[in-house]
Figure 1 (tube, rainbow, N blue to C red):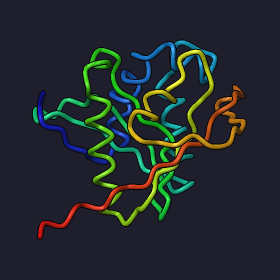
Figure 2: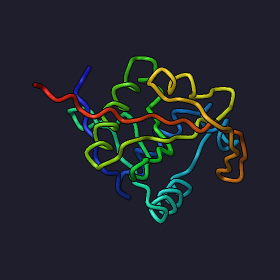
Figure 3: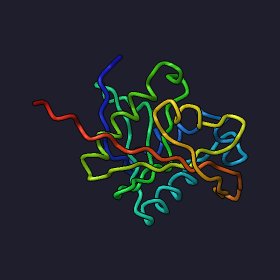
Length: 165
């Protein structure tokens, strides 16, 4: 597998972000009730997320190809709103690698814990997050794009790098 990097997404990346979203029609149906989104919708989403303190980062290979994205708000307990990979690379270990890179970035930003809300939908990501060490908690209701669904709040402490004595 190629080396991964994380870089901030900007307005010029909206086509790439739209392609990643649209490669995941099951996710879109589960979360938004549609199988495709338009650039305009995602542009507005990114602006709203920025207003709420979130950042969108792209996971890129050493050749610069974007293979996924993450939306998160850094804090003592970072809130991970979304981690999404292009569907063509799912099931090959890329999700674990992307999350590990994101976790390093969060630690560098002073975050000690990560919180996310795993949707309780037919294609729930909860089993993936549990394999990565997240602990499920209470159930809440989320609304996104007018679509409401239950979700499980999950937390994970970010392990500090081990000191080499």
